[in-house]
Every structure is written in structure tokens, then in C-alpha cells.
Image 1 (cartoon, rainbow, N blue to C red):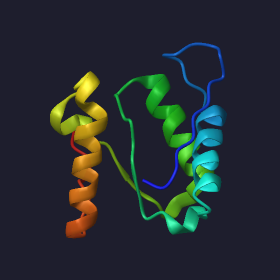
Image 2 (cartoon, helix red, strand yellow; image 1 turned 120 degrees about the vertical axis):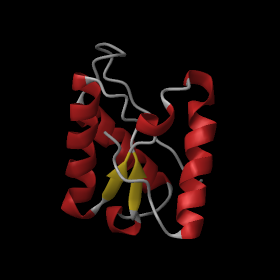
Image 3 (cartoon, one colour; image 1 turned 30 degrees about the vertical axis):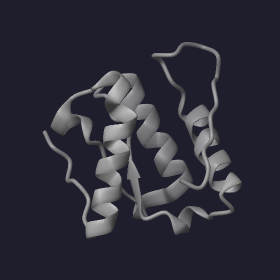
Length: 106
């Protein structure tokens, strides 16, 4: 991990806004001195909520455009709450190491 970005629009924790999410992504990229084109894959939060998934998709698209590979691992293992960050970081590292990423599971 090179950097992170955090942001809050202050409206509601379970009704995120795409602009606020995009701002956090841009902060992380800036902090790491990376361009969007340096990122090949995004592991989305992807909790299968209407507001969250739409906002996250819009934010990711606004920063990275059409070319980014994106998936979410929660469709494979559920939302493990406190363990989620560690499990998804581990899986993303494994995917990067082995040169693949998980397809979207329905």
C-alpha cells in the first residue's frame, strides 16, 4: 500500500455520493504520486446496495474511465464486516501476484 484517501460528504453513511468517493480516489492517487493510468484493477467495496454500488461505479468511472478492471469479492464471501479489509487485501494481493482478477459473480 502506497497511500490512501478518505472523504465524507457528511450527508449519510449509507447513502454515499459519487463525487465524494471520486475525491477520495483522487486523494489516494495524488498521495501515492500515481496517475489513474497506473492502476490496472480496482477491488470495489460492492455491497450490492442501490446507492452504494451506483455511486461507486460512477466514481470509479469518473477517475479511471472505461479501461479499468473492477470487481468485488463480497459476492464470493459475503460482507465479513471487521475481517473484510484484511480478506479483500489478501485476495487482491493473490490476484495481482498470480496475474488474474475475480470475475463478477451473480
